[in-house]
Image: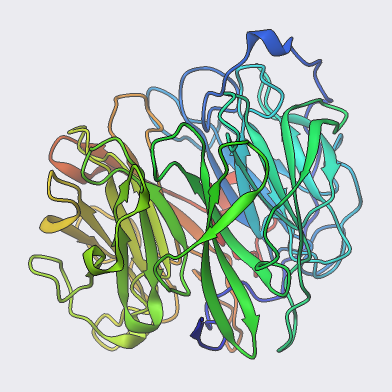
Length: 469
């Protein structure tokens, strides 16, 4: 089954800006695999998590919709405009040339694929004929890359051997009603810097084959030490569905499992701190989010699944279908209490007469699971948040929770990819907001906002913030 809908108005369109990008350092040598084990979301190994921002509709080298990615490196003072790198197909060391409509940066994944102790960035795109690119982590930052045969990917330790693996989805994003279809395979890690996996294995299920993979997430729902895989897929005629695959004890292939339906993004987080990953699924058609708790036997029965909305007690706002609450979701521990918290984007939120201005809610985990108690709501009109809400900004179209300053509290990143929208158009420059996590929750006293102008990247219709990782 699927949640049928037309592609949302604020999904990344195939329109772009006007400039081209320079280079980044050449490929650095690979460290021995024995040095190993992933440092998640830390591309330069300095102990601070970093934020990758996709701008998938930007013009690169005169090619509309070619796309790029800007990586903002974390540090003791959080994100700054001076510590970043921008990567496109025109960047030195990145394979391929810019292609119109490719949407490089449409989907992002991270993992220490070569086991050198630094996270690598896998940049996906929307074309069925182009490859994703692994950009390698290094002490001096991301540098060099290799093509992998996929449009969308997801990294995770799917066989439980501590080495990150990579699931490859060869297909793309259909431009029309009918999905292109997907060929799914699994590359076992470690993966060498010349793009050779330790082994290649069958995905194990044909249920994904007819569809296009839009979003993916990895997490361990049954505590067996192997990551499981959740997908959002385009099923055709405007329909979008959800899938869950459990990793097999043998380490080979995946087994399809029942999971909450929803057409939004998906995340894993232990919201009740019982040692099992819980599945958080956005259901934007109904402006809700469903949470299915994990257990030793997998997701708990459907009768235990809980839905949350802006009508849940203490959650700011009010439930309205056009809000698209749940279009974007992310999990992380904001207040350092050991429970995963959940950020939920509602990019269609109307503020006064400003349709589609957008809002982000943060709901907090507890012993009893996710709760509305103490939840927070943020817009561009919230005191301390830079900027001002405008119709069509779609603030909250992408969200992430990462501890970017190393103080053990996850910080909120929220994007408005249609910020500074061209009059009469359907895309904007885009921008991202970084708000700090503290024991009291998300605070605005050190808020930082940045867009393509801030980082010196292509500007016009870039949809900066169309994806976050």
